[in-house]
Image 1 (tube, rainbow, N blue to C red):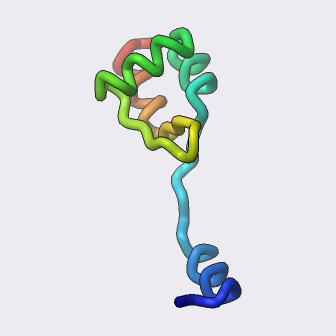
Image 2: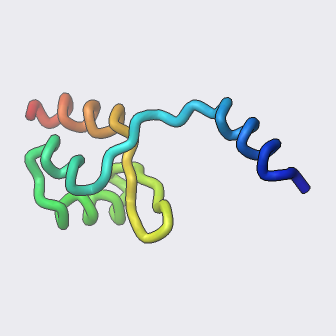
Length: 70
């Protein structure tokens, strides 16, 4: 078991990619929030659930926007 200080030292080294919430993704894609949730559930947009909130990598949203021509 790690002490809190050791855990903090280890996790400070992890670089997380920029993340966006569902509403931010919807705004960036010109979609509704429900449309983004449907795309997540249909595995069209990859996302991760953090607690009760879905998050998407900003790069995924940017790529989807480029494909849509938005």
